[in-house]
Picture (tube, helix red, strand yellow):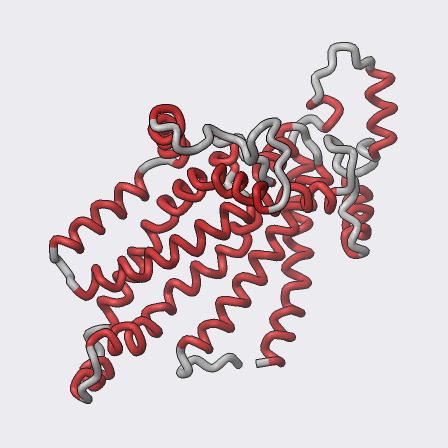
Length: 320
């Protein structure tokens, strides 16, 4: 296992190099730059050229890439042109806000999907199965901004149970446990929306996998041995039914830190998704490139985690 992980980590190096070349080339092909994106009517041509020289935007593309890549190897992602701070500091300021709602929605969606998928497969074509299927397709078909606006209208404006938007109450200046309670209260609606959107497809995976597993010979053998039905389902069947869902778990790692751009916009949640979108609009190349490479690294690590979990979930799989 140790040799396999080391080999996979070494294989990530050329992959990351290829990813960095592609994303830098795409950013270089985008028309305009940070200077033109500001759309300042008082900006003279001489001043614009002076700023491009200061930011290094007047250099050839190849030279800019090797300068940027060399700094990345040293752990220096550069300074954000919009925030005037190091990219790593900007990421640290906002990414954990996104992790709050992403983590809780991930835990809830997996918990709901496991039990809904298992019981839906166990009682196939029953009334419960039909209700679950209806709710699954309903959650998968509704866009996030529509669900978010509906929840704001019902629970925030009409019932006044939750705040309309934001991460904290304006002017409260709470500290300690009061601050945590305030943040959690503001995060409930975004968490509900993210959970609804991710639970549907995950439940379908568990249901389909369970339908295949519960008819296998070793499940019939476990029942013939006199084991309790729920021991057979949750101990023997669910473990193998987890394999297809483990693939999805690998992609949840970048999603955990990537932020939900549209949802953060609807709820005015100060997450990294909004900052990332702003960096694209404003041609803030240091932040855009640095954060994209960060997500690419998380994606590769997520795939490695999935492969390792395959061997843990199913001993028949040997990593070679």
